[in-house]
Image (cartoon, rainbow, N blue to C red; front, side):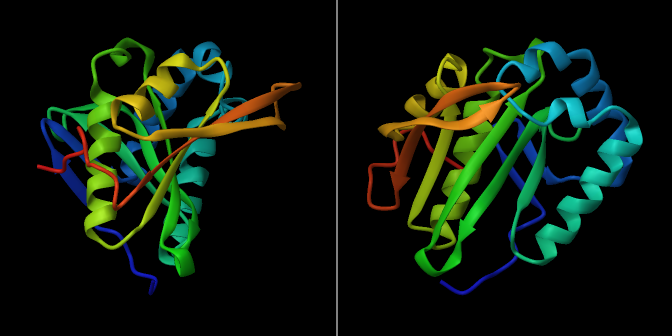
Length: 191
């Protein structure tokens, strides 16, 4: 598969995925800061985002990685453009094999409303339509809500990577899910 730049925005079912903007650094930082304890339970990066400038630096990094076809990270807005609710990204891109991993997080007050499922579903649908063949979701064992997103969208549980990562000082297992372009699409939609 030839490398290409993903669209800056993807819209679906009252969800807007938009390439991070520097002007959003403050609201993204506020969301991380107020939800830090919950996010840190399963994600390794929240302790590194201590200030708005840290978030701005991360956004700058994502912009550079975007242009280099290495990472495509989106802000998730509910009621398009109105309310920031989290982030979804395409990472660990394997262009020769048309494969990538999807990662996501959501602000706690919006958890359980189906917003991440809609965002991940819209992004997955777009990627399959663009020619990707394999998408993965990796969840820390015990992060039931994250696993439910993958399962709800019809990703198949492939197995467990035992003790493959250290998060917050503890060795953890990672559950790997995948969906192929040839699999039934299920709830995945970008309309």
